[in-house]
Image (tube, rainbow, N blue to C red; front, side, top):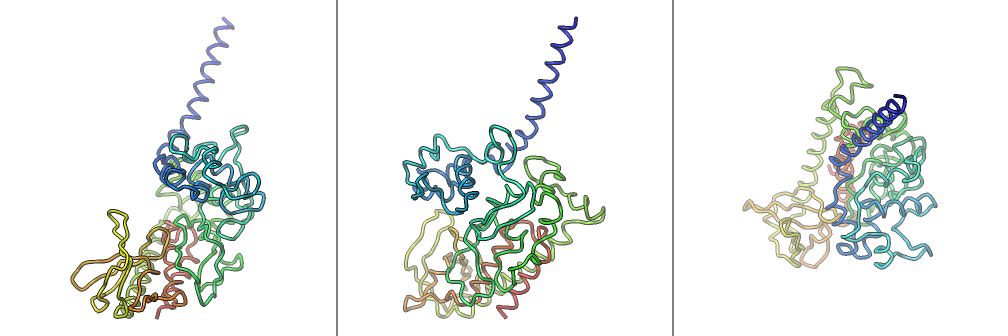
Amino acid sequence: MKRRIWFALTVVAGVALVALAAGPFEQWQRSGHANQLLAVMEATVEARGTGAAGCGRCHAQQGYVVYLQQLQSGFSGNIRKPDGTDADVEYLTSLGLTEAQVQPQTCTACHSAESFQLRIRDDVPTLPSGFSAQGVGKGAVCMTCHNTRNGRITWDAADAGRYTAPHTASQADVLMGKNSYFVNDTTLATASPHALFTGNACVTCHLIFGEEGHTFEPGEAVCTNCHGPNMQEEFVQEPTEHLLGLLAAAIGRRVAQAGAQIATVRAYDPTTGQFTDNFAVDGSQVTGAEPTEIRGQISLKLLLADGTAVYSQLRDVKDAAGQAVIATTDPLVRAAWNFFLIEGDDSLGVHNPRFARNVLNASIEALQ
């Protein structure tokens, strides 16, 4: 009898453990972290060549483990070989960054395969986005990838020096109040209480208070946990969305003012993903523009008088002499960076309401 009872208890315990594991796994399967196609597109040598050393840092489990080790040793750049030289296709292949072997962000990306503890927590070394973070609990693991990864910008620079857009996963930058133009981001005054005073930053709202576990979807009522039953995310999101619209309109007006100078663009077809060099545009027919992003670059959807539109990266909008119509010294470039910083955070200001509002208002003012 005792043996039967012991066997039954063992079976029950085993089933319970499987159920506990199945919950997070099933949730993960519904998350963006489980996107195998994205891993193949962004983190394999077949798709990216040696570029997989950059994108593979966060779009593949195998790449992330190597990247994090390098980050913790003080190097935030692309994956390197053990001897410190740039990773080549052979080395990236040996890591498993191939169509046949690549894995998305699986459990063992964030968690150690041996102890199942998070690979990093509390403090984040200097990130590819050029800043560090301390005391952010379990949110540290999120910040290692959810950052703009384009280096540290100087908030009061008169020349952006490039047309690069912030990498879409800009949550760490917005939470910590970093990498904005026109707003002084050199102190902790711009950091969000959501990052500093919730115990685990990202994880607090997206997992601990979240209703969907490892999908990392926070749920509609997550704000009420701390801010009371009447608090709604729309109170922050709707004004932020309005300010984004005002900034987009200001960018469009500034482009329209310079429209007569436009002679050619490197036209982009969003359907095929192909470019056409030296595509002629009658600048007098440009009535406005909408900010967009093409392959990591600040770009425009140029609106023409006949109702059609032409897409181009901003750097390729040229005058008759072949010069950029909008130089990197133009405040439009810095304002557009700020637009994509806040838009790409994807919380519509919830992550850091004051910072988001200040950045958008300052950008609108800079274009007046």
